[in-house]
Image 1: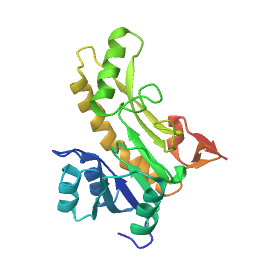
Image 2: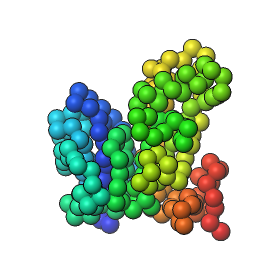
Image 3: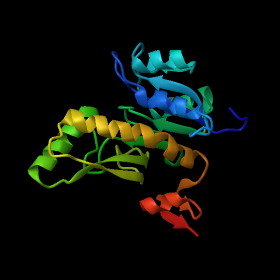
Length: 224
């Protein structure tokens, strides 16, 4: 990795049995030629000691930290600023509340439309079940992959991307999840790269985009 590249710390819960695919794809996208994510993944943090995130980190040669909590602001800052000296934090399936971090340098990815399908308890299959139910009831036409800057209000930070994902008539929560997850993995590294290199940023609580960046077509305000 080029000297001076942004340093990114990934928080990913996964599970005791698996998970961590989003984290793995971030690492892989940072190692492609050319790199999709021009940054260094300096570590992975999970609340599961020997789960999927641990196994993937070990295989990829990325430093892993098991963090069972408590999830206090001071502990978050110690991990990010002192232990890993990270420039940015990516929450890729992190299911714990976040406190004490700079919202402009902390990004989350969510497998559904926000703010409608966010908040405590709305993660993973719970999101897809609620989305399919809303579609069947006739008041929702599509799902979304949502990326946002992270505030201390769960899933309420300023939205960077809300990428529509069609819901098909025969979709189940499982089939929808597979399609959403595919798009999550494809877009996560790309959007994170734009943030890490200052092409998308947070200023005065609003998401901004550099004028020359074509990403503005997704509805992000331009800076002129």
